[in-house]
Image 1 (cartoon, rainbow, N blue to C red):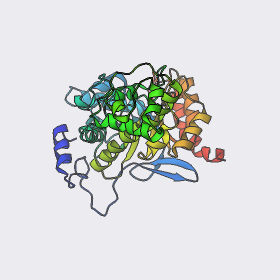
Image 2: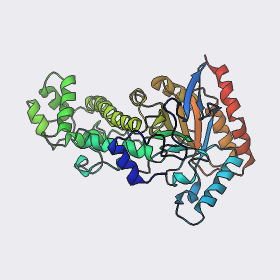
Image 3: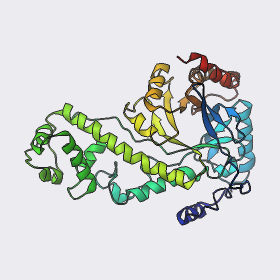
Image 4: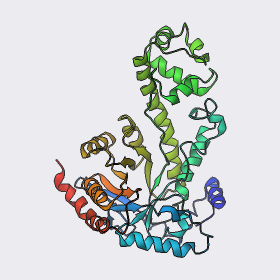
Length: 389
């Protein structure tokens, strides 16, 4: 695997020659289709195809605590190979752990490439200048930072024919409005001063919803009489009409979501133009609002959906999410024993729009029920065609 510095140098330089030559395979002919994981939809059922165009259902797991091994750690290669052998013996065909050096396994088993960052790591401090939590996506530095985040998503998997897709990173929380009907991100944006592009965009969103600044002031409990006065306000009293403020918040969050996703996905696709799948950030199904899915799906190839512990949403809820998104999904779940794992795998593999499941719990890999369920997953998924309306 090329080093991080060389990776960034070549991306910045815009060199096209390195695209097929930075992995372990020799450079391919321009006429040869790239050897990557693809996705197809046939008769209503979505499937992943490996580099040889063979269908498979992604069965993923983490490599647990040993995944912190780095390439220069004594015995790391042998240990990783042993871990992979244990996973494959239990029927898993994919790993998902950003902490491991992917050069240790990137040609041995399919894997998910995702950055080892928190929600807003990599963004300039200038973007997070209000409460050190939520960034101003209209700051002049944002698009440069977004390009960096897109490249980070690609870094671990670039050039490998085993990478299933690039996950953009953890998702911000898009729910969580307070008693005044304000999401913390919108609260941060309205505290910006009137000379910032972010504050001006929030005021612009309000101008699209209200006939006058006086109407806005009545909602937010101020005595402002004009738009400029509202724009330059940084201290706000208690909201007078929380229901209306909540509607404003939901509308503006959709504007922020579009701006959050688009440049990062564009950066990832430009960094790796082979056509490798781009997945969403890790969206928590229990908390994400319905309006988020169509916005995300305009840009990514599939959702990367965290179902949480204890089973997650019912199948009908997953069908509703798919209907809203119009894209397939790779799901993440957490179980603690073989029986629960088998039940959850069957539930998700039996849905025609689910292309794989990643197990992040503590289920014992040597539980025979795990290997048995993994052995049936492809058949469950193939049978999902019969469940279509």
